[in-house]
Length: 250
Ligand code: PGA
Image (cartoon, rainbow, N blue to C red; front, top):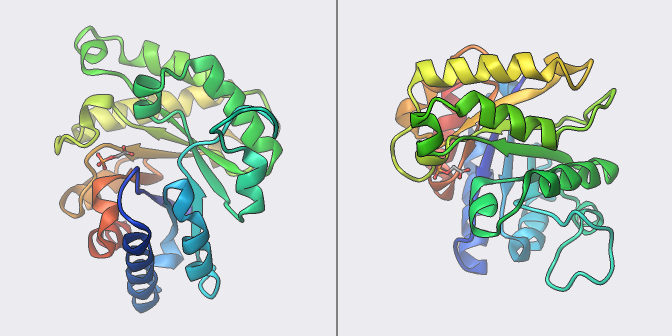
């Protein structure tokens, strides 16, 4: 199974910044093509920057791209939303669903996230479903209960999952510089792997990513933990060198 290395650019930068970042990412990956033997590399720019990224990637299809969110609804009267069919039409292959910033800031519920996953799958997008507990939930020892509940709401029972991936991102580790310990990651990824048996016959093919302060200096250790099949990377994906150093570490 190839590792899935995903850059989440979040709400950063101008159009020109996006053009420079994607050009640097392509050039750097082109110079280190051996990375692609072990990894699938994906970038998720803000919606408005997707056309520029698509244009740049045209001659370099080994690099994939996706979006950071999609609507749960079909095209129609949903002002301000972007549908899964629009993402498909823009050649996206992946979509991040249920990121903790959206759960917190946009009040997305488990049920809504489950609907988004179904809609994304209907349009042949591969959802990257984010789950993870808050600091308070971990201190109360509730991390498995929380992640188990999030998975139950997000995952429909299906024969195949069209390359769906889960990203375990403890909320307190995101953007904090403090990644979870290898032991915490190992325990949670083993728990998620076990839970996946309830949802799909193809559960062994589902990649489980870790996200939350992944940097070049902790990437090799993190990506060698059992059941860690990739990484979801925020801050460190905004520089081509650090993003690809993480991919290289695997
Ligand atoms: P971070 O973000 O790598 O900056 O911690 C990860 C994420 O939010 O997906």
